Image 1: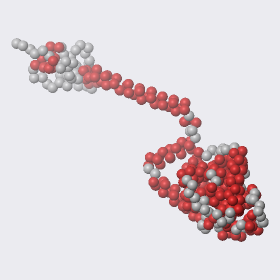
Image 2: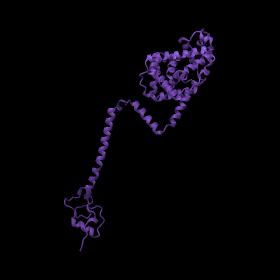
Image 3: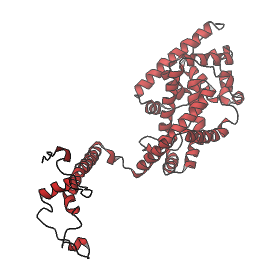
Image 4: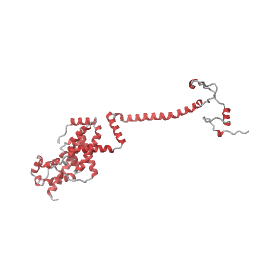
Length: 198
Length: 163
């Protein structure tokens, strides 16, 4: 996913700070799909995601007057989203619901999806739906912090540097979390391939 | 069978980008956001709204630098000094009023000292006492007109006269 233009965001932020509420509406419209993907893949529940997104934008609106532009709005709003989601997950505990049922029908026509289904090796051997379900299970077995990194890097396509800014950790920490999460996911999926019925 | 490598996992995870909310969700999200904002505003107590408005106002004025610790301490000290001055000044003014009261309560039938003109400009103040101690004693014995100035010694403490 491409990073939005920061100068455009900055102008909208300035207008919001000077009292133009409609400028914030533009930011909401612009960032809702992106943040939905982030929060949804961390919570794996649509209702929780909706409530969290509302709270995230509400908090951002209240705090935007104090936003001094030391980081981009993109980083700032993602930091709010990740922190609020991690806090929510700590409160919620390990309860989760699988997200596979919500896969949009348009995915069937997606080029990348068709390539994935046509690829040889493990993907071809296993039923893709079942594999996706197992993958979701595996992702939800990761710790919240590791899932956040996996979501941002693999699903949202953010670079390491951006993730480190959002999480306020070093790039090395991001890489090590990612490495550990990948190993865990591999183990889960290999286990599935060896024992597909379980 | 091959094991999953990083690329395959990455490719599978990328497919999760296409998981989308129900149709129309993003269109309705902004309306829902506005509705929740209004509800939240209505639920807030008045003092909180005022506090937030004041906070916004301060932020708009960019007086954050003024709210640093030295400035805050100086402001507190100035307030304390002003309040303490006010408190210590109040008893003094009461005392002055008490000291002046004998002059103001001079008997109206003092001869020759009052004119028809304004009393403020033409009243002559005497340095000697208006009444002697004996006169004061007589007022207690005879049916004296009501007095509004209390003596330093209560009447009940005076020795009884024996004839």
